[in-house]
Length: 91
Image (cartoon, rainbow, N blue to C red; front, side, top):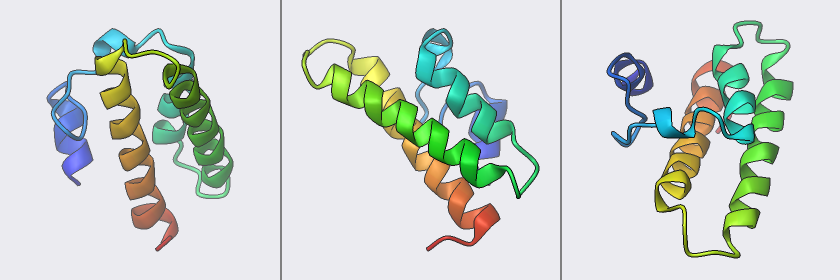
C-alpha cells in the first residue's frame, strides 16, 4: 500500500518524482501494467513492462548519463514486484 500513497503524492516508491520520465517508451508499458485490474491479463502486462524496463536498463548501461531515469527504472521494477506479490501471490 506504500505505492498508492506515493502515487497520490506524485512520487514513486522511493520518493523520486517520476513525471520527467512520462514520455519514455518503457513508461507506457509500466503504466499499463500498474493500471490493469483484470487479474487474468495482469501477468502479460507485467511481463511486457518488465521486458521494456530491462531493455532500457541495458541501453543505459552504455552511458553514465540518465541518473534520474535509472532510479525511476529501479523504482518501477520494485513496484512491479510488489504488484506480483500483492495481487498474484508471487513469492
